[in-house]
Image 1 (tube, rainbow, N blue to C red):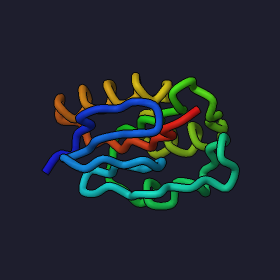
Image 2: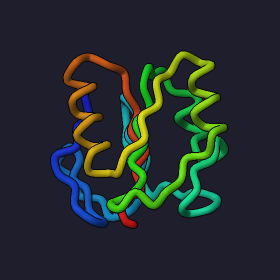
Image 3: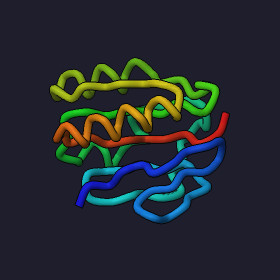
Image 4: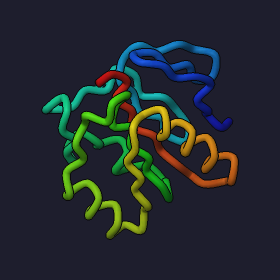
Length: 116
């Protein structure tokens, strides 16, 4: 089963027929709902515990509708060392990129901030 983003708009995303209204993470085998970060608009390595254990080759980060969430260097550096590509973009673009990558057979994770 490949999870794909069916639609996204500010504060709302539809995945596999289900609509979500809170930040979330898509892993290759499941959706982690109601994802919270220690500091809302700052993404730290500690905020990605489940992703650290996932078997992925790419992590796409949706930084929000307006791109307000900052990804700390520690996140990019950690995944680079593991050989995992990190792509950070505003959420609408991140969703499109994620769908393209999974269609191409990549094992991707998607961490999304749905607002701001």
